Length: 132
Image (cartoon, rainbow, N blue to C red; front, side, top):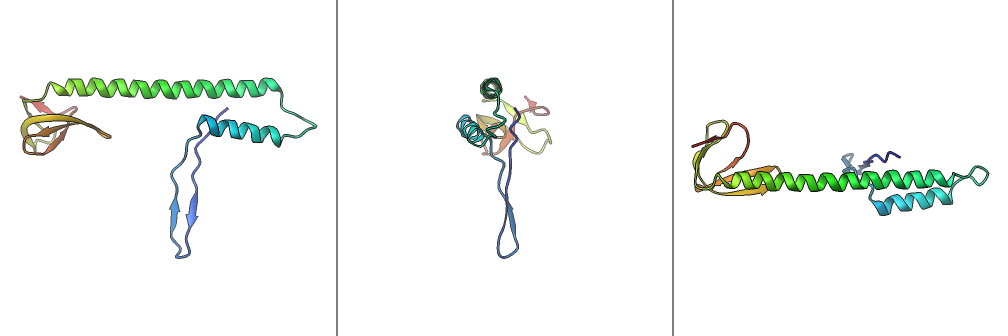
């Protein structure tokens, strides 16, 4: 069973529109949808019980995949941070060549690992960074 994210657009009295971010369907929401589906099914043509079991199994597989991906992301971030830790005390230059300095610390931000220089400047750690 495929459950796609939905978004809603609201129009205000002054004519502006705002689109809400798509929301994901969690396990509890899926169960509520399943119960609503059962309550509103056509009694002359009920859904087979095997179809319900198949939907639950599919949702369970998707949920496990999402959890596995989240764990892999955490492992990759920890690995990147550990590798970036070796930069502390070394001089680096940004990929564009504009910022140079000695690394005081490395931090993990939502957009990746950043080297914080003694000057307070931040350089994203990645391809193109020159390490001396």
